[in-house]
Amino acid sequence: MKVYKKLYVGQNAEKDKKRILRGFEKKELQPGVYAITLPAGKSDMLDILPAFTLKYPLFKDTRVSELYLVGIAKGRTEAFELTARIVEDTIRAGKAYDIPATLQFGPGI
Image (tube, rainbow, N blue to C red):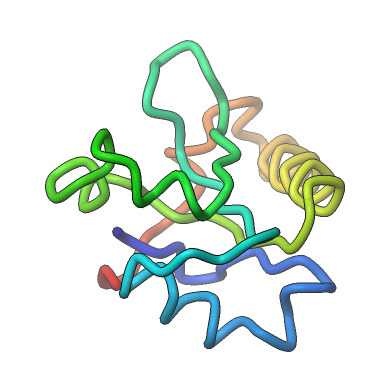
């Protein structure tokens, strides 16, 4: 999983940021935690994934390594709010809805 250098973090997730990222690395169950990633499909802008879904067979090995983590949130509402903020920031940057072109990624976790 690659992580955006300026990872978006919701207010509720801020105090647990390191623990949440470690949990993603270890593929732990993290109830109430959401990962906001670049879309798997070309027609979407972003994907909002409950952290526990990363344990599904679909996300084993190669699939998880292909994910680009843009934001983390605690709670569904915060995940939606954070996603809206990412889209707004992208629009302000003049990239309209080209989120992948706007974001730069650092090393994986």
